[in-house]
Image 1 (cartoon, rainbow, N blue to C red):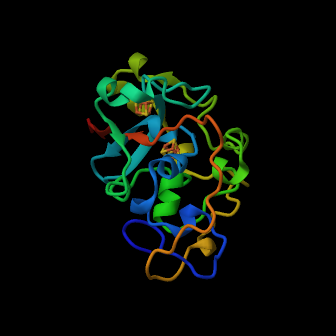
Image 2: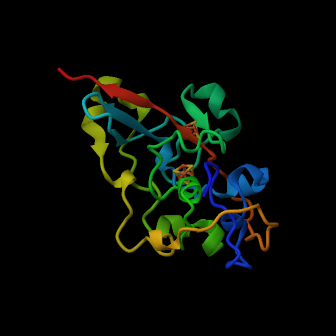
Image 3: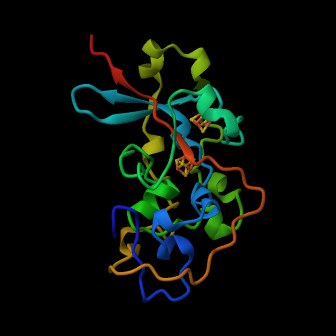
Length: 210
Ligand code: SF4
Ligand code: SF4
């Protein structure tokens, strides 16, 4: 594995693009399709000043739709939300607070996508069925919660895998080996008309200790 993600594995002749390509070599469409549409990264986060630990809240970005789990103005998101960060192969490893279920994080760590990822299942619905998405779990919008009250909304579930949801993305599935990038053997078909959130909300605020 390199800093850009998994290296090719000759033992996987029919492996899909996310198992064979460096992240930096992916096409824009491939890159965007790594997003499972969970919406977890669009929740506000806090960093503990003592431990440097980042914790999630269930307060959503003002542009997050808690039902669809999508950004309601994706083309203009960075103009409207200052701390919305575009994910790139260069910054993917810096964003250490990405949820463990995130497709970008999994691929960057050399792991396979889970069964519920739309690229695996062929359906955008499975991310909801598996309990990965934020659907029904967003307690409030940031427009209604002042910064000093964010601590009241700290939750642990965005940093965890729901029970029974792991599927194929287990550590044992880590891609091994190193070498040159081989041509894409078989790219999984991206679900049609699937909106994407290839951006994350880097709203990591310091928790002020009294
Ligand atoms: S980028 Fe955000 S919405 Fe997309 S898979 Fe990662 S955590 Fe989920
Ligand atoms: S993509 Fe950015 S602007 Fe859109 S909901 Fe997520 S964090 Fe907010």
